[in-house]
Length: 488
Ligand SMILES: Cc1ncc(COP(=O)(O)O)c(C=O)c1O
Image (cartoon, rainbow, N blue to C red; front, side, top):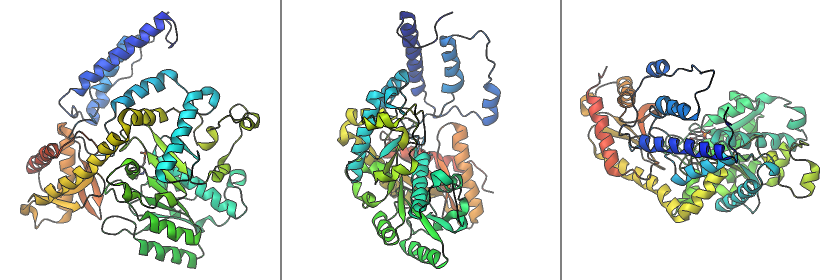
């Protein structure tokens, strides 16, 4: 029997090189497929993909061939110019190289003795990210699996700090008191992970108060002030305000400085979900959109969005390191007091995960390979392109711009003059069908979402290689597709 483990032997290293070469050759072929997607339906893929494992094993080569046939060929081409539905980026070439190194070394970030150089690189990157934000020097923060987990960490520490101020340890004793009176505020456009996380934290969806938004989908400060006053009058207590820097659809950035000032008056924790807008930390043209981010208690960043890293790669930053004490756990086998006393780094105490990938390497290599100038340019490209696309959409007689872009997304809908008298439901259904028909055809993936009760189409223009001309082609496709669809 051949050794299946990656190790030093000639047989193993040869098998490794063969497997990587076979896989990367297949990727190169896949990248050149002209279609964005082969257009198979859910039922067709269910029928096609079977898990009939061979008890003897197929060997690496055949297993890779089957993955190419059944997975790769029917994958969505995220690098395709017409793939614009989600905050789902094409990735940097250097991120692929980083993945090879991350995977082959299989370091685990939960203790220094499982990831010596990786631990130091991650800590230094956290220090660097803090300086980009404008936080005091330090290393309070950690890489995460993405925005949902980073938001969970922010809300959890906000909850635990809130109870600690009243002399109660959630870690030791769990939740106590009249929990129905505890609230978290976020805008009605905040990410749904706020609700999901509050449910996980034992306070339920009922704890989330939605603050109204203005015509640019940003949190309305007056409504926030009124709701805070109202909550206090009702004897409710506000655990945290979650501000968003880059809402998922509109890319709206809440007024961070004003929110932080209001929260400071009332001693309320502010967490900023900058999963998308955090990319502007590197921007040359748009960095000021994040004005005030340095004032908040904790921050979510996501590098698998407009930082062009492979999934997954995110970070959580904590303004004051002392709050990390709220989640400290001393496990003898990982982070003993003996080791800590000797200055051995301890990342497991900063993370919700135990075993954890060295995803930080991707950001480090990205910054090294591109340099900050090129990184800024590819981030700014999407924001600028969205403005150009919006101007173009506004000129098209059959299209309607639903809202002015703020980051790199454009919300619009198909609404020709012939449908001027049609009711909203008919126009909504037509736009939904356009999105579905485009994906079915395999030619484009355009988002379908709702903004202010209006069903609309969404282009998220992250891809820095996409031009206005590419988007004009896509919009023409939207129109021809629409014209072939029933309107009722
Ligand atoms: C604003 C915002 N926050 C959080 C998330 C969740 O991030 P993740 O998918 O990395 O968990 C998203 C996802 O799109 C998002 O748009």
